[in-house]
Amino acid sequence: MANAVVVAHFAEVDENNIVLQVLVIDNDMMTVDGVEVEQAGIDYLNDLLPDSGQWIQTSYNGNLRGYYAGPGMEYMPSLDVFTHPQPYPSWIFDGPTFSWIAPTPQPSVGHIWDEDTVSWVKPASPYPSWVWSDDRWDSPVERPADGSEEKPYTWDEDTTSWVEVE
Image 1 (cartoon, rainbow, N blue to C red):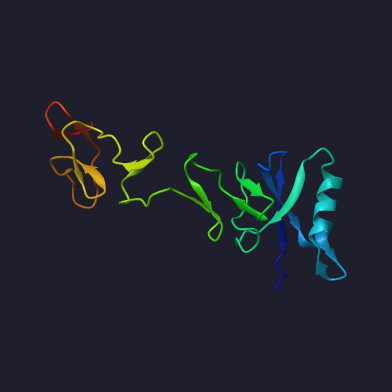
Image 2 (cartoon, rainbow, N blue to C red):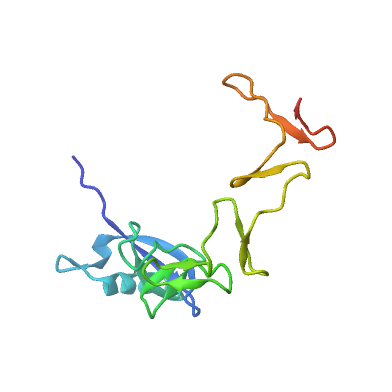
């Protein structure tokens, strides 16, 4: 039985600590005397890509530095974690979860954040005749189904009915 290749993941960050890319290297490239050494992996990548930015190890399993890094994410040096970008100016960073949270809890799944009012709101109705039901907009009549295979239908607001697409 062949041995599995063990790899390590490193994120390249720019001068603003924004992740540009994530590269995978063989663990042998960062092993010194049988021990994984992050700096050895960084040195390897700096030798391989001398014009690159700063390299920081990340964990595919999320057990190192918060989230697994991905392009566009942010590295927070003060907490030594990767996180998603702040979605809205009013949202605050929650250190224990490494997540951005809204200033008020979301009332239900279907609501979306409105930064102008700093509140959760229902999304705009797709059609004037549709009604809000719990956490989504529903048509005033049920969408037809044809046994196990649904035919393609589109909503016709003029007749307030589903019309089969031909």
